[in-house]
Image 1: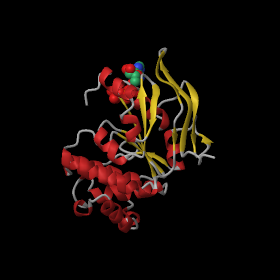
Image 2: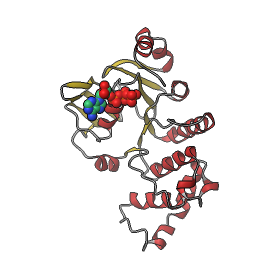
Image 3: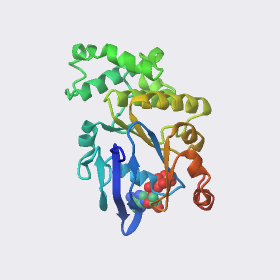
Image 4: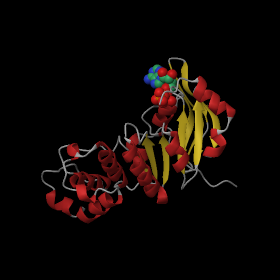
Length: 252
Ligand SMILES: Nc1ncnc2c1ncn2[C@@H]1O[C@H](COP(=O)(O)OP(=O)(O)OP(=O)(O)O)[C@@H](O)[C@H]1O
């Protein structure tokens, strides 16, 4: 018997005025894996991701999180179940230092109110944990730097730290390497590998080199449907995948 998927879609469909951007997609993400959704431009990756993270309502089909039907839940409800989308839910306050942002995220996880004027003492309780999260993402030397002043790659690392503060079981990363230079790509990929050691990661990513390096399993989408699924070696030599990338307007 197969292990229970951490997240699973069953015949998931999303139509926009009759056009099926996601058409009858059934995907299973196994716990403890790094799983990528890839595909040429317009394949339906973002739509699928937005359905999973509850930013869009499906037209048909269902989504199960650890066997529980979450199709009709709201993003904050699924976040509380342990499924957190990075770079969206974890908004970073640019005028606060990196450390304060992580403390606020820790506070939010506890469901405490958003009172950062009066709650200095309460935030201090999170100091140690926040520092260790910054360390985890390689930002310990940047703790006092205003978030706005962090270099781009470091900003993404901070966003990852604020996501980790919510202690997710499943992290959903939307193009985590987009817009990064080579050095940041290497460091961030390493970071994703590290944070994935004791959780599951599902990501949409265009950088196939990194997908090859990082991901245990890859789902290739084309025209809103699952084209192929498997490890990188399997999907990368599949003629349908090659055709879809060459035939499709992929320009990343
Ligand atoms: N809100 C919307 N209304 C109408 N059509 C949409 C909407 N969102 C997406 N689409 C269409 O659905 C298809 C899939 O789009 P989607 O953004 O999911 O693809 P993608 O694989 O993420 O592409 P990219 O790599 O370019 O981001 C595209 O043809 C797009 O034009």
